[in-house]
Image 1 (cartoon, rainbow, N blue to C red):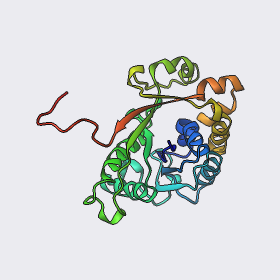
Image 2: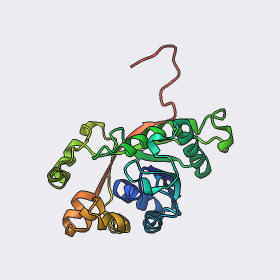
Image 3: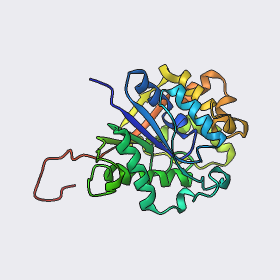
Length: 253
């Protein structure tokens, strides 16, 4: 069976490498089409250039950027609205156009918490992606955004409660609240250790974040075994976009 094509949608440059870099590398290595849409930062910024380097390492093509401003970094997209301030319909329509253009089998994005840190841009990207993944298949929604295309599934990148054992020692000293889900909510646990070198190289390609001590900087400072413990597994919650239950005459739990 061919490996399904995959479109990842994340808020900032570096989220794709940290949250789904191993999965992107795995699908690309198997010959699948892969791509990444990044909601914030402008295409002419240094972080966009770093994103291009990371995507090249992961085999995910060129950057696809919506161009909104990072909610905490106004210089990320001068003259553009913050992602969280943009009209919802506008942001959804922009992403629908990217989905219809790439026509993926699977879409991947942040979970409802926005990942471990709960960054507001992560949370809003989750909302926009959930709406866009459904709307992309409906011909009367966003008719100017291309021919309808319905992805088969949406996967939400997440961390289970059990991951606290790995991440807690690194985030707790910084006063970070970790937003994890019950382990039984996770529907896909992927061992990405065969692609870990590519994932780590992609994370470290985000040089600005390494230098300022953000998550890529944390990874850069760790020894190899600890990097594998933190990044060698990726977790997802499946959200079906197509009906899986038989037709019926009443609503059932």
